[in-house]
Image (cartoon, rainbow, N blue to C red):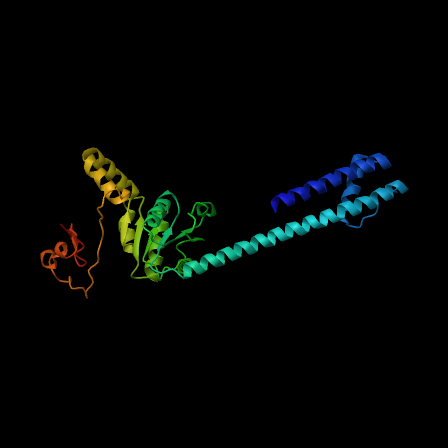
Length: 298
């Protein structure tokens, strides 16, 4: 469609050039008068002739009208069709995407699609976890992986969070580079879904307690995490490399998983020894985290 439009634009300019040169040669007019006459002829505005035309000039004008007016009319019709078609296609695409989101349940919402948000999406996709991306920047949404639905807008807006399915979601991450924005996202999401797991990014240490008070389940500082990782890599490189292999590469037949013991489970209220998890499943229990204490016991 774009190539066809460019061809017609070129044709219109070519006809205008021929008309201008023709009036200069046939009528002996100045270049500006010839150009003006060509423009009013092609645009059909109905102005009178710049100067009286000779018989040859009238015949030339008739040919210019036949060749030029049709091209100009078709050009504007094609432009209008392209605009309407583009808007319609965009509307249909948004409607299809919204229907996909409406069918999702137990998914994850990524608010902010910078470098951190992109990595979150990659890891969620690798685990087969459905996710929705929300970002104000249209340019950022262009980097969203194929198959991942996205919404453009303010992620702290309640209505937009509802469109992203926050009330049905399993978790939400606020990964923008602005702590104040992450705080508002956490507050809005917690209000709409009290049971939602919310992980918020903190760029400043002072923001961590505020984000927790706003409703974040956990606060992550990329700079703190990176610093600790670098220090541990220096001090215990073999252990860190081993954990990377286990957690990220899948090269070993060793899986670390998290299991929630529900109140109706026969494991509820038992010690690790009483549960006999290894005997019954072959799995080793590395740690136990009690919901009421929040501590990890190994």
